Image (cartoon, rainbow, N blue to C red; front, side, top):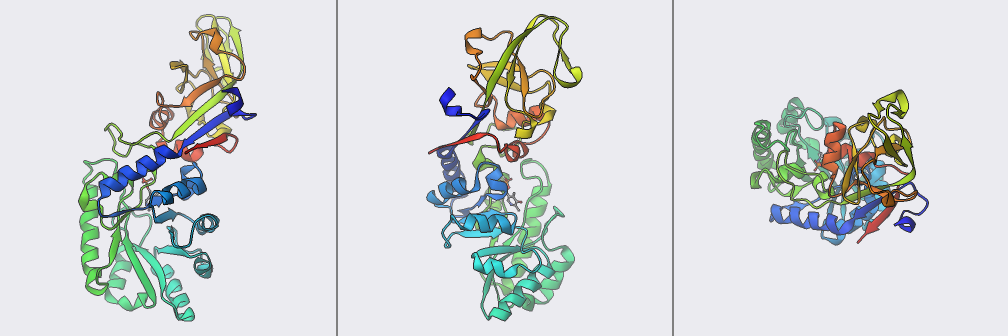
Length: 371
Ligand SMILES: *Cc1c(COP(=O)(O)O)cnc(C)c1O
């Protein structure tokens, strides 16, 4: 155990076998529709390169990032016949880099469409793109007015090889939210009108949770992220996904404190009886969120122990009064994210979502990929 963590204060294990199993499961649910993957934000903190390579080995041919910079870094490791889509589209003036790095922009506005068309005309070359349409989330994609302008003048996409029409769901994890059906109807209507001009136009609609809303939501290409990485896709239901991430922090020291002593910054926890406290080298600088102060937990040999006191920058403190002292040596690893305390459970304790726990995973962890 000790040597596995090396010198680092904590060990992050990323199980690429579980990731692959999750990919196969989602592809299975999608049937004939293709399963792409959202690998933005360094694959939600798990490592875009190893994650993408493992997914490509499973047959994934469509990778989605948010920004051009992410696509360029990824392209160095991923064959050019695998599509990399940049969901924010091109930063103004950087359109030509998409050709250089064989990346496909998601065009979100008439301005982005115009700039892409201009480049296509200059190059006298059909340039691939996805066009995103806002069906209610009001975050990205053509607005209703821009869509109307497009439907009235299809020449704005002259020179563009339109690969997919795309939209994004706002509440897919809540299967009962009526917004899901509203967005679906809206997207179906738009597609019907677009396909009168773009015959056979393909479509991409669902994130992880959308896949679980049923076949109507699948279209041609899905873009799951979170579920691949082990986050539960459906609120209030047992998750079918495998855990991908395990986090273990190392005990630095253990101390006995008397009744009445306080622990940590601002004295937010006080011992009501003589207690034993273990200090572990993971803190909010590692993405172990400060909101876990006095409500997070760890596991030592399967026994749950409460985090007490505030989370510090580099450490947390655990009340280990009831743990066998043989297990409490300097250098021992305690489980922070594990099957007993999943990413979703940690998120609940921290008052956030699994996505934020994953994307916060810190750079100081020693990372270990299992495949
Ligand atoms: C992040 C993102 C996804 C992936 O979402 P998950 O909920 O992680 O599956 C898909 N599409 C868009 C537009 C996104 O921004």
